[in-house]
Length: 485
Ligand SMILES: Cc1cc2nc3c(=O)[nH]c(=O)nc-3n(C[C@H](O)[C@H](O)[C@H](O)COP(=O)(O)OP(=O)(O)OC[C@H]3O[C@@H](n4cnc5c(N)ncnc54)[C@H](O)[C@@H]3O)c2cc1C
Image 1 (tube, helix red, strand yellow):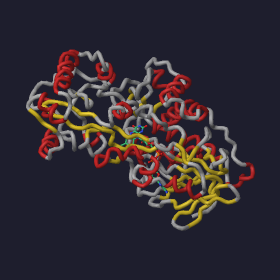
Image 2: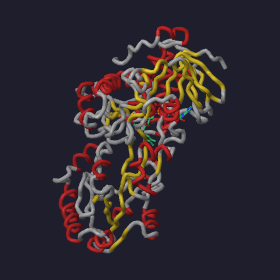
Image 3: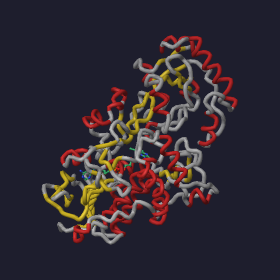
Image 4: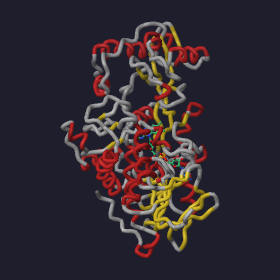
């Protein structure tokens, strides 16, 4: 193996592949390390939804949008806790990155999509203008397209090799150690993903996930071990985004992402400990986790026998038999009347009955005066109204934030994807992107597509800037010209 590369990329998920391909497009020689035996990381497991504004897909559907509007929404939803300059660069570059992916071969039809599995343009979260771009073949399709570009550029990917550490000399990062061998380069891009699979780091940087107790399950890729945090500690660099991540609400017995687990019944309500509904049950996870948190951290999902037996076949968790098993194990409650069910879950009897009555008067007739769920169902392309909840027996299962998808704490980056040291200046020769590079994924996930857009957009920016920092021109230092498209 040569030790003379312009750019080394650590991690072969979305951010790493985008960085490697972009650096090669700028003429850099690139070497990529991947700890697992195949490329893809969480990106490959994802639905691949990509949030972006002002795209050709939106334009084709007659939708007017801009990076400015995206920026405003992003900052408002995140309570302006993020650095505006960085978010501005992200919002400006997400659209061009999507167009770049389309040029590379990613297919996103110019059509309206009702959900994360139907290619086209979907509602990503709670934005007024739809921004969720769902690609054909989902995250797998994104990775395949980027990998094809990688191979076209002749970029070597060393699989099954977990980078152990960064090498820093005279204040500059000059390479990495992998398999106990030093490999040197002009610049290094850390794209190692998150730390969802590392319980100690979850305890330290995203402890709120532990509120789920035994119900917590992790869907992020195996390689999400948080090596970026270790790299940062070893070189005394700050970690930001502490306490933030995406943990999605699911019923307590779910164990997989919905690809495998399946979907709860459409005719269901969530009630709080007062027996009242408190949310649109189909609200985006841009807001749903926060809403449930406000109810003491959990709610009760109520449904009836018709809903149970009508569950779609073939899924691991949401199927009629699994619900039966949970009842038999004493974990899901079942009763012949709504009153008895209220007693079992210790909520006021009259209130739960009134809540169910109100649902039966409204949703089966296509309206939800309090929570406007009929709008969400329409945006999801749902056919027909939900049924009433009236066929005994009745069921109650706890719903709480328990599916850990991604983590947001990582190396602090600026709008060029350069990693910042303690004093706030870029560490020469070091870039980070995706979950490893923190500052874009915030308190509030803006909806489906936030993390993939972050990984690929900042990965592309990192790769283009790292390419300017070649080993042979280190004295010139980096030229950070790709922050703005
Ligand atoms: C089931 C699921 C569905 C999702 N759906 C969506 C969605 O539709 N839209 C969206 O925006 N987000 C989604 N997300 C989140 C999103 O996929 C991720 O946040 C994003 O893809 C992360 O990209 P990344 O490049 O930072 O990390 P990854 O894609 O995880 O890549 C990191 C890579 O680095 C490797 N690695 C780690 N340490 C080392 C090391 N020391 N040396 C070498 N290699 C290393 C890992 O093995 C991995 O391959 C989903 C996540 C999951 C799990």
